[in-house]
Amino acid sequence: MYVLKELEVKYGILYRQDNVILSGTHTHSGLGGYFQYTLFMITSKGYIKPSIKAIVNGIVKSIDIAHRSIKPGRIYMSKGELEESNLNRSPHSYLNNPAEERNKYKSNTDKQVTLLKFTDLDGDGMGMLSWFAVHAVSMNYTNQMVSSDNMGYASYLLEQEKNIGFLPGEGPFVAAFASSNLGDASPNIRGPFCANTGLPCDYLNSSCPIGGLKMCVALGPAGSDMFNNTKIIGENIFKRAKDLYGKARQEVRGPLHAAHQWVNMTDVTVQLNSTHTGRTCKPALGHSFAAGTTDGGGDLNFTQGAVEGDPFWDGIRDALLGAPSNETQDCHQPKPILFSTGEMTWPLPWHPSIVDVQIITIGPVAIVAIPGEMTTMSGRRIREAVKQELEAQGTFSNAEVVVAGLCNIYTHYITTYEEYQIQRYEGASTIYGPHTLSAYIQKFRGLAKAIAEVRTTYCTLPKGPEPPFFKDSQLFSLLPAAAVDKKPINTTFGEVLERVDSEYTVHITDTMSFQRDKTFVTVEKYHNSTAHWDVVHTDASWETRFHWVKNGAESNATIEWHIPLSAQAGSYRIRHFGHYKQRKGFLETVIMAYEGVSDVFRVSKIKSNY
Image 1 (cartoon, one colour):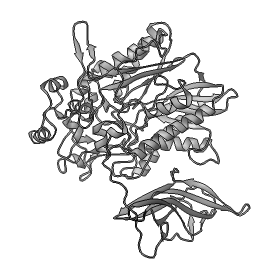
Image 2 (cartoon, helix red, strand yellow):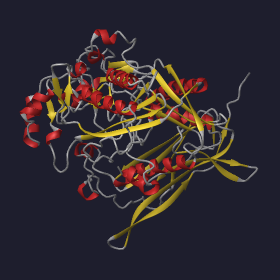
Image 3 (cartoon, one colour):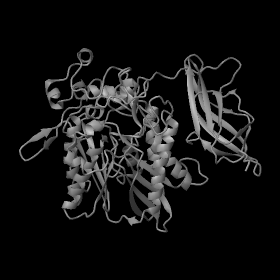
């Protein structure tokens, strides 16, 4: 909503609710504190204004740049499969889908990569947008650094290749790697094993005989090395996208349509067959939600696949938050409810009731904006339903339907009815009950039909009930104000604590520590011909890592540069820019900038004996 308000100020009605989709890659290593519902605020230390400001400003800036760069061009589409990059983390749930339906597919995860290539009229590449179903959790739950994970690394590789001489995020070519129906698709392709024994985890509830749930950990292609896991999966996605980009020949032609509606997902009646109906429920999370997944388990004694409650935890819930109503419990069967979030409204609603459904079509390509994480089979059913509806009217032929995940608002997971019965993590996190997917299919069919009948103008398609938009004064933060920063006696902010060596060879890690606060990092190379230091890497580069450790009122920043094989021989330095908070007078505090710089060091190439 903040983004749309900013766009309205700048562009009027050009960019609107119906033709703007915000879709997350779903990295688990990003900023928090930007949701307006209580459950999300509690789990991210409240509503963090600097987070929302940075995200909104970044999105709007990107749209500004795109708007200024508008020119006539062409779009091409390409499709292909990518193996050894995703694994179904809830195969037992998937197997509960009808055998006849499963037999139509050769895998229990979607392997297809769909790519749109954008060029100008001369055929010069401007960018690409691709979709692939995999969770961005190669960087595991132990990571404490901001990371765009495997999808971000794929984007980094392709943009660096296309934008020669540009720093990350600054070149003209944009490579966007978007999420799809990734709900049960993990990048940890070696599967779950018990960390203490090396044996496979229990198939049904993903736990270990000794150590329980926490010991059951899924491993990526590089085992427990999350950086190499991210690199391997990201490279796989990058290489397939690069190949498809080069092969893209099918031009996408035709009109552009957009359809959007608000839906009260707590009260949708679903026509199950000619004689029976079902309905959606007020939001609720099941016991297995607290169990987590094999990509990162919970810390308490919950397990996946729970279809009965636990008297101990239910008693604590009842005492602190209140018991779920009989109506909500009946609606969510067989889910044992842990948190009846749809019945919890203090200090604000704990979960959204009103959500977006949205489709944008570009010629025969339909982008279905899903407000959550669809499992593999849920995504397949949505694609099939939308394709049928578009083609039934005769307006579309050979429609290509793409599921875009995590769009506009977050509503956790969306499983099939059959998967819901198993109540693993994904089913327990399907918050609107067992008929959630059927409700979405019904609503997206309606949008597809409206597009096919060309009645999608912003004024003629009913908008539906709009969600609440809470004012800043209603939102809360659990993050205490930053304290005044201190430093050891006889030191300065930005002072180097650990000196670099005088020389390194490529593929060696250069590490140094600073006395600090916030960070911006540059790796700079000296050019003798110009007598200037040129920035070759920033903190957005894969090759740099920034660790910040706070110890009371003091803190240290450690910067690593993992020197790549492509690094040129020469003289380098690392610079660090930050700010610290100091007291001015008795009550007033001020923010001051500081800078730190390493000694100059040389990088040399490894000499070959051949």
